[in-house]
Image (spheres, rainbow, N blue to C red):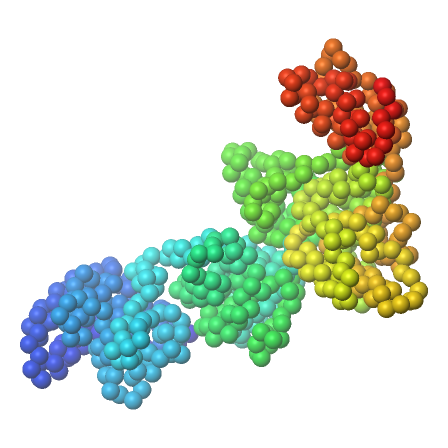
Length: 636
């Protein structure tokens, strides 16, 4: 920030206009009287006015932030005149030689700022790289030679200088309230800001504390921060919009400059092309990205910090802060959420239940609203929907518990081992089609408040060498950006036993498996693999799985429970045609998914005829389902 005495730029410019008028009259200009009269009116109206005081104060503050010299500060004041008084445009038009109101030319602005354009260094103050233009405080539009161009104060800058702090519409929906949390790494960001580093890079994965860490550093230094999430930009930038990500970044830099704040840019990897602008800006920037700093973005290397994920006790404290001391249960506090997401979910839940403490169910709904698109849609599946043998159900419950507490385990130390291994959890679900593997994956995701990112591996395996690895990398890279459960279906398409190398295809297949093994080990999320062939798994893969859950074909007793479970979803059944689940379970040796299909088809058929579901509907639907499976109906 500049410490040069800039005087009173606005008052000085109004005082220098008389000199400019006298110079013109000396060469026969006949508009001097009009110009003096207009200037006197403008001067009298602005003298001591609240608007002029606000504009002068803010202009000086802004000039110091940017490091303007006194002449450049007065150029900005000259360009601002038409924005402060109705006659300002008439006055600058007269001085520029126009017969009608017009904005000042660069030459006129420089002249009444005390640096005529004929001076060797004068026009340099309005070059593209000069502070006035590089920071967006002035624009000289047009393709005329620079001395003849008009100087314009952009609307957002003029609004600010007149006292309006409303952010530009382009960025308004990207801004978030800062949520400061003191965690490891804050000290490194503080040191970088104290050194006036132009950029700090914070690597922050899903649920990590990147933006909150940056906010805590700013708070410790007594600095304000402007937090903006570029991840929301694609929602607000439509295909027909002229603006792009670069324009958004420029607008955010301007907002932070006007506010005198540090810009905390979340989702900063989307702004890789704008790194030169971030480095050149007088605004200190803390960029929060989901990936590591890429040395190709700039030759200058910033301070880099890895943001930690909060533990359950830390999240509990944060929930209490945003719920006025109320403590949610472990189903909420164990959800891996970033601090700003905790704040948003708490605010949403409180808004939905004014005057009452939101319960865990309300908080869970609010958390789901944080998903992409804000639909709040989960599958709604719970452990009660799983009709499984007790040992399989217990393993699913254990998997959910591991997922909830994996951050707490990671906080204990290097218990996962060295060598770059991740802190994720990997599970294998094996069993015949329809036995509940996909439903169980939904239960895991919903229980953890996460989205289910489902991938069919059979569609990823590619016959061309190297393409399978590329496809897998894209999937894992996307999953790492999301707070999700990665569900890999049809896993046996790739996870079969590695063969001896008999030909080149064997060798490349083994390379694909080896790549997947390595990628799973460093993945920090939750991976669920599904296969129909339990015995078709490579032992090396088995060693990297914390859970192996088998979904057996249901026996008769389990089928009874499955029929009861799915029929219980109906409000009523036909009392004159009662359903005998014992007969259905005994005669139909099918999986749970098939039973669901039968009940659904029977319901459609019953509704179409205005009936309630009865045994007749179920037996007909069962026969059709068996036909789909290539099997004959046993008869009822």
